Image 1 (cartoon, helix red, strand yellow):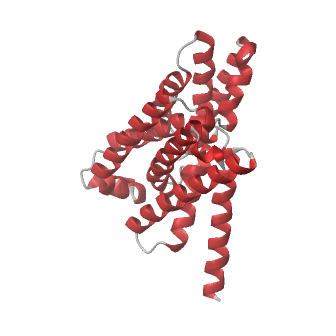
Image 2 (cartoon, rainbow, N blue to C red; image 1 turned 180 degrees about the vertical axis):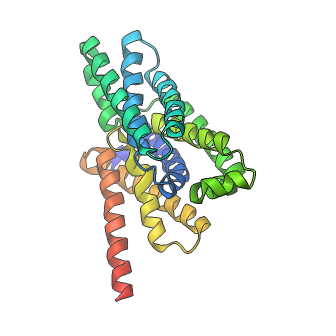
Image 3 (spheres, rainbow, N blue to C red; image 1 turned 180 degrees about the horizontal axis):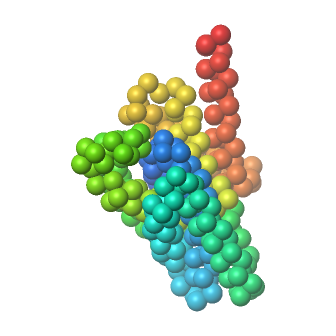
Length: 267
């Protein structure tokens, strides 16, 4: 139990709570727009940026963040080019991210172990700089979502109708995708690139089963996310388990229990 009071655990808890807040705030709009896989895409591109950061000896998360934002612009451009097949943009950018990451891995064989920690998460290694970056991103996401929640809501359900109503859909699409890139790039050190989409989607999927309104689904998804982060970190810390994997398995367990409970009430 002493681990729960250590400095590195407190930093991990702070970082986890911040991502636990921002991921579902963005994830709710991704799920409603059927863009759940965009998290995986941006995570793979971010890993390529992290690898480059290690190679040129620049703060890896900063380079990963730049890569993710650039990829978000690419996704939006391709989404417009392939309106009928919008999912192609995600597949193309993901392929490019994986390809670039693999090349950078081979160029920097000496730091492969460090990059691997970003694949599976290394929340216990968060330092003060990481917390500042995560906190800044959390602040930006909360402000943007608060200001444009109604516009994002309309965009998520009917983009064409939103455009007819005079909303700047191109700008809103780009803003939402960039916000996703910021969240994903800062979350990979906490849960890992392979698991980051779980924080974006599973809390939302659970909340949509029981929420009675859009606002309540946002609140519930954040509560579910934060609960999984806190319990996951405590369980992982006490029993020496992988924090990212523990958090995600807790989220899946909560989803299953909700499905079972809802089926029980409906029969």
